Amino acid sequence: MADLNELKNDYEENELNEADLLQDPFKQFDIWLEDAINEGLDDPNVMILSTVSESNRPSSRIVLLKEFNQKGFTFYSNYQSKKGKHLEKNSYGSLLFPWHTIKRQVRIEGKIDKISQEESDAYFDTRPFGSKIEAWISPQSEEIASRDYLVNQELKLKQKYEGKSVPRPSHWGGYRLMPDLFEFWQERENRLHDRFEFSLIKNKWIIRRLAP
Image (tube, rainbow, N blue to C red):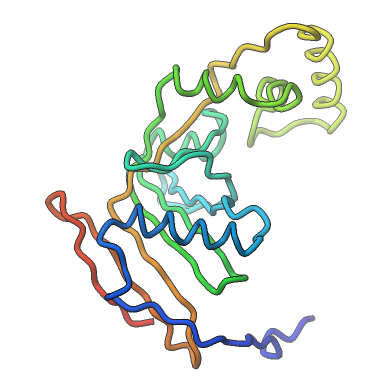
């Protein structure tokens, strides 16, 4: 088995000071996302979404950030998936952006709601043909007999919709996490990392430095 104790990190002397933070965490996130993009990170919009079941069992998976603004952070999924069923019972979740290459991470918590059907329709229309078909054929998170089931369903629907507009299935659409907490983490030498938390209290963002 791999010896994890042998793994070492080369720390650069980066730092994050309160004086350098913007007072608006959305704007601070935007700057860091731009840094991740400019550094050439693969899939800088990859984020780990964590939800909690009705029986309080947490579950995490990777999803893609498709839009963010002052309203929140938007991603898309099957409403009948495991995450969708979790969110029906417990609408709170968290996001984690693991930008290891630039030695940063951002953690975001908040309430998650479905976006409007009109917004979901508009985004669905921009998806490639194959992705639209996938949204119809995959009973996400459910057991299937074999991969052949998916392949056969794909062939049938591609033939059905060839040369036609593919409508958005009612079980597929967008979610938006509306943050009430951000945490910006900057890796530092000797594991004395910089951590700053933004908490939304009475419609005002309160900033605290946290111990690493």
